[in-house]
Image 1: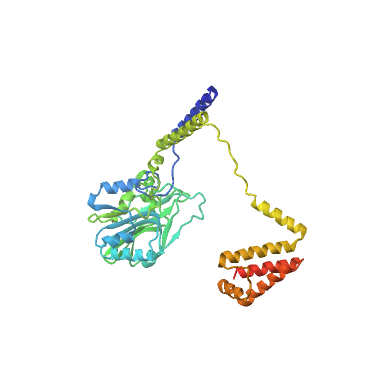
Image 2: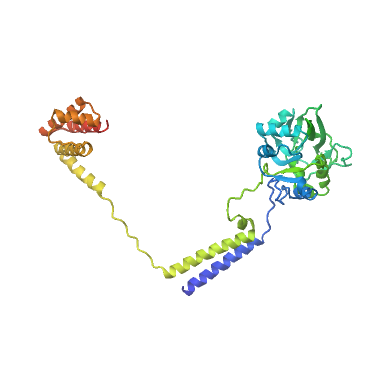
Length: 405
């Protein structure tokens, strides 16, 4: 390696090292993805809630369920507990809804925190939801949350200081449904009162069990629970989970559930390991480039001989076409056809009498009339000179028709 190449390689390595340092020293941008996953410490993860519940429960009273509810309940339908779901949208299919409701009716609790809930479950419970829009408030003030239960209610409502989509129960069965919480948006006068409350937190008895629905899953995220004293709202909302039965924490209905398909997952998950891996690959490529250039001689490219069959065929065909020697072309075509009969049907072609025609027709699945007409025309062409282009085309047409039968 010459000194010039060594200097160039050194400069490249320094530039790469500088880029890696600048990239690794930058602060990670805030990830606002609504994952609701237990492992995520991002604002819309559920790391705080998951660990809070897990620490306050024994190992037997807190279980994680990563399979779909239909499969879990099929194997563990006898277990008592609270099935806890939190995600942006949860939609059970009809079979899964029936199985869940059957499980609840035997004295269990279904707790769902989701902005959207599938129509199958809502229709069964005679519920209907709608989105709430502030048409008179362009700035969109943050929502105020309040619990209805006097023992859980605070003097002032809880403030969720984020611009979020809000859903409320438009229609409820008042005979079966208990309202647990409501919300409203702050007005322009910054008043901390709910002037037009919208119901978003309810419970309903179903058989011997209970179904609790909360249409603002944001209250179970890291951001809400760590903002001021909002954790008290989440804690109060979870009071409707019985203490004497296990909690089944759902990991299946999660936007951010982990599906690892790459063996390099652990490397790429960590920024520093990822850039170390990139540096290793770049270093190997540079080493192969410079070392290979020094030791390996260029291998000359030897082009293969071109296939001139098509060009030769075009040349011969052009010669015949210019001479207009239709008789020669016809004789070549007849000879090729006789060779085809000898190879395909194992027949001698010297004597082309009636016996030959009958056997050829039988072997080729052609009629005797068609075979005789072809042989008679071949004999006619062989004895005639000159022949026209139309006669040559007719000969070709008869031969092709005979072969394709």
